[in-house]
Length: 126
Image 1: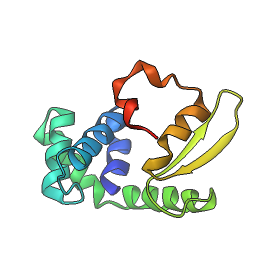
Image 2: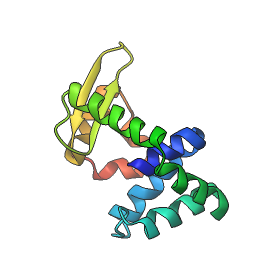
Image 3: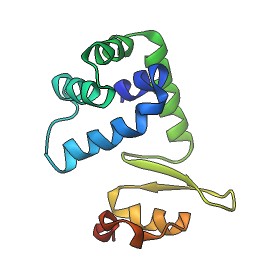
């Protein structure tokens, strides 16, 4: 998660692509995404540059990225999170609700009013 925080400080517009790539590597390819050699490679692929990936990896060790992760973790606990994955969703009425676990993604989609028929990937949701 520190790599995500570091990336959000350096190239925030690439965080969604990075998270998507990490989830694919973990859930589809069963790769250990917590290992630096794996998430470093994913960073390089998402950024299109080994040099930029190294900058993000260096940023991970800096106080700013560490503090951001601590702040995000504290906020997650304050909102009711007790584990990962934890999602906070805000619906079109401005209401906020937390969802824990992969098994609740379908409920989160319903809460957000998403059309699950638009993407075949939604077929696997409960």
